[in-house]
Length: 244
Image 1: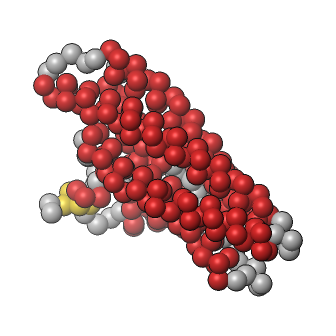
Image 2 (image 1 turned 45 degrees about the horizontal axis):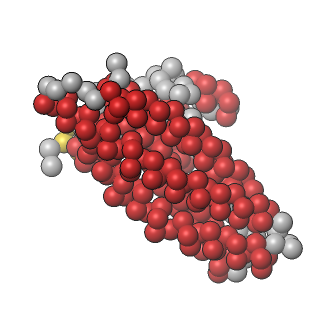
């Protein structure tokens, strides 16, 4: 695998989404201090540091350190063609959701039933995640049946020097609006679960099912961050470029 050296250098006015799009390794820095770079990708470093009381120079230094080594192409998502990125999202992130959402719904309902009298927040967590799972399935179908196929057809037309189909362009425009709204809603719901669970902190009376549930919710959030980042900050801008 040929490695390339990232050319991006970041400043206080750099947007979070642009930083992570340039080098996904910076995401680990943001994750460690609870900064949302996917749904909050339009926020600048200066803004988020002001909100959280952080030293922007120190944060930039951490990002530069995390991204100093050469970046291999298999991590350079921004360099991927839109259709290849769409396939990756389906095969990795959509597959993960379909394999795990149902069990997380069951686990959250179970611990709410068993522990809800002592921990009333669990009922709200279960209800929120059940809605996330239902909404996410609709969201995935829209991407797989409408949005991603239109991207593939348009990319093929561009490669062939052929005119773009007006219906495909209309599909892209509509999907970009609806999918973006979905991301905001699901992101807010996930933030609510994090707050209710005190960042997935187990109480003293937690059983093994409680521990598994919180671990899976944390894993869901981690996967969601990367999934939404790849779309909001990389794939969606590439799709919008087809409409210009």
